[in-house]
Length: 624
Image (cartoon, rainbow, N blue to C red; front, top):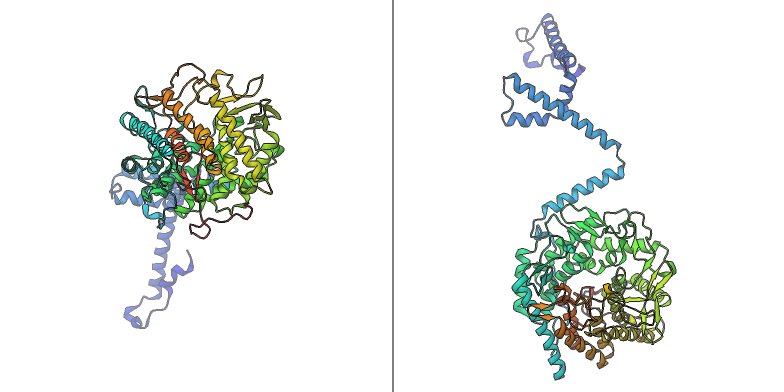
C-alpha cells in the first residue's frame, strides 16, 4: 500500500482535538493499523488467488461499463448466484473479445487503420443523410443568378420558326407517351407501352424525368417542367442498396439536376445533385484515385466492368466527371469533388502516352495502361470533349486542360485521322499499333468538338481545324444519306471498297443517337452555312417517318432494311440530347450561347464559372 494512504491514521491530531480525552493512545493506533492491514491483505488475496480472478479484475477495469449498464437496468441484484454467473460470463467474453480486437488491430499497418477510421467517418456521414438529402442546412447559401441565354428569341425566318415548332411538337409527343405509360420509370417502351430500365441505373428511378428537365425548360414547356420538378422533390431517392454506373449516373442524373438548377434556380435540384455527388465519392477509393466504373450507392463498394481489360477503368468514364464535379464543389462549398477529378489529371500526366495517345483502359490499382486500344468513339470519346470544355468552363483559365486537349488532338490527327479514296475524312481506331478503318456514330460528336475548340487553337490552326470539323460533319452526313431509311448506323467502315457504310449486322442499328445532330448544331453556329440546318431537317423527316409510333419514338434494328424493325426503346438521351440539339439548331445563337454555357456529354448545359464572378466572358489571348 502506498505510504500516502496511511497518512490519515499517522498524522498528528489537529488543534481542535488536542485534548487527552479526544485522541487515540499509541497502542490503540497500532491495533487499528494492524486490523486495517489485515483487511487489505485479505481483499488482495481474494482477487489474485480465487479462480478466474485475473479475468474478473481485467473485466472490472476494462468493461465496467457493461456491468454498470446491467446494474442500471436491474439485471444485477443483491442476491442470486445465477445472475452473478451471467455477469461474470459476460465480463470474461467481453474481455476476450477486447483482447482479440486489440491483437488484430496491432497486426494491421498504420495505413489500413487510417483507412478504416476514414471509412467509419464516411459511413456515419452517409447514414446521417436521409432519403431527401439529409440536412439541407449543410449547404452554404448561394445567391442564384441565371446566366444569359436560358431562353432565346423567336427565329425571324418563318421556315426556321416552323421547323423549330415541329421539333417542340416531337418533344411533346415523346414526353406525353412517357408520362402516360412509363411515368417514374427510367425509360419508355413506346410500342409495348410500358416502362423500361437498363442495368446502368440499378434500382434508381426517373432517369427520363431528370434527363429531360432542361429540355422541357428550354422549350418553354413549363407545366411539364413543374410536374417533373414535383416528382424529383417527392420521389427521387438515392438511399438505395443498388449498384449503378458511375459514368451514366453522373452525366444523366448529376448533370441533369445541375442544369435544371442553373436554368430555373430551384434549390431542390442543387440539394439533390450534391446528395448524389456525395454518394458517388466512394468510387474514388482506389490505390490511384482513378474511380471504379460501378458503385453500390449504399455500401460504397466499387468494382469495374468484368469485360474491361484486366479489371481496368475506362477512359471515357473516369474522364467524364470533371464538369459536373467542379460545379458540385462550387455549389456545395466542398472542395473534395474538385480534388478528386484534378487528381485524375495528375495520374494521367505521369504516364507515358503511346504516340501521344490515351489508351482506353487504365488499371486503377497499378496506375498502368491496360490493352492499347485507342478510340475517339466508344470508350474514349467524352474524355477529349471534357478536356476542351473544362478549359472553356473555367473561363479559359485552366491551362493544363487546354494543353492536354490540343496535344491530344494533334496526336489524333497524326495517328487516327485518314481520308478515303472517295475523299471522306474519318477517324479510325488504333489497336496495338494497327488501324481499324471503322468510325462509330459516337465518334461523330468530334466534328462539333473540333469546331468548338478551333477558335483557341495554337498558332494559325484555327482555319485548319474548322475545315477538319466540316469534313467530319460531311462524312457523318454521308453515313445517314447512304442508308435506306436515311438514319445513321451505329458504326460504318472504310475498307474493301466500302465507304461510310455498315458491313456487319451488329453495326446496322440506330438507337436515336444525337452525335451527328450535335455536330450539325455546332457547325451551324460557327459558320451559319444553311446546309447544316437542311441536314438536320432531313434527320427530322426520317425520325418522323420511321421512328415515330403511337406512344413515342423507337430505335431501329437495321437502317438498311426497306421497312423499319423497331427495338421498342425510347432512350432517355433522345429527349435530353437529340431533340435538344435539333431545337437549338433551329434557334437563334443567343439561346444558350457558347460563351456563357458548355454542354456536358448528355447535352446538359452548365454555365461558365467566371473568375471574377461576373457574367462577362474572358477574352482568350490566343483567339484570332
